[in-house]
Image (cartoon, rainbow, N blue to C red; front, side, top):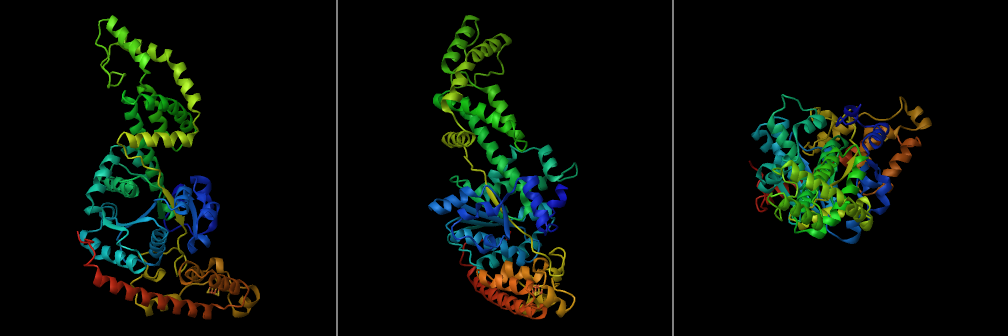
Length: 495
Ligand code: SF4
């Protein structure tokens, strides 16, 4: 059932999207909408229907604090009107003050889709041109190609150290035949998602289709996993006495909190690891050192882990005894700091930062509905009549809209009587997703006239086809202008 729901182009009805809320814990966008200043029309019209953790992004927007937005594009063909939605989402966040990133996922296209480098080169520039033509500001934002970005690859390597095969197998259904490059492309994608936070952690939103949610869950998990690694390191440092004492309480809290959460098995593991490695407070260490000394053993040196893998059984028991004796102190810490989960998490993140770690905030995501194909069914890059490419000749775009399936009734009489089915009409989707732009009144007018029987499909499609033709003409003119300027920009898009 999971696969059915997360099939990229298969989910187009509201009923299917509801499953995502129930099964995967994606939250309804409507709940966070009031917190968004000047929401985009895709948000207002429910095309962006879900989110994970968008509140910190909305809050940063409201308070004029740093935040980021990033999306990647696999250059598997020409960009089409489905991609335009994602371009618009990135551009809108940039206009609201986000550090905006767009990347060409060439390593992924090569590894996961087996595209040749020349095919990738052929399409990569096209995505960037459409993004620029739609309003992306390249001076303020960053455009990159995965294969060109060394920092990204270094981060991917780090993240790879926290990811293992069985996990990828469970998430992506990888098996013994899966090639290593494909796995590398997954950690590269994880690195893309966390890349905007490399210099400074900040709320980051990734606009995606719901089929991409498994990536988001892994990325959010990895962000936390890097953190717990950092905390473990902080624990290991006797220098950070105060931090250590604080975090010990927090580790207990975290273990409790995560034990309930089936999505965070690694965090439970991390918390158990912490317990295993937890250093005793200073007085306990002294008593251990003393006991070791009395037993004629090497005292445990400061600045090393108290859990010494080479310790003898005797020393180890002395250690356990000391730690057990101090359990009371730990419990007091938990009470004394009285941390709730979010506070503890934030504290751990700060410590990670203080100790030279990344301090990633879990990345947020927003999910948009997929457009229905013009011929009904799914919109597919491989079926030209089902979609409109941003590179289609404007007249061809006109013709495709004219030939589209509608939610109209069998006869004009019936339509006048019962009204059209705008909710099932790919042409209405064009109005709502693209042709009405920011004009809610116009989109509503089309809808009301359709369901009220005042609007008939012939005229409705003619109007949509003309708007589409005009849109493509204007878009392609702007693309041509950017094509001339592309050389001046410092964007190297060739491999
Ligand atoms: Fe679709 Fe327009 Fe026909 Fe309504 S009138 S069903 S919106 S084409």
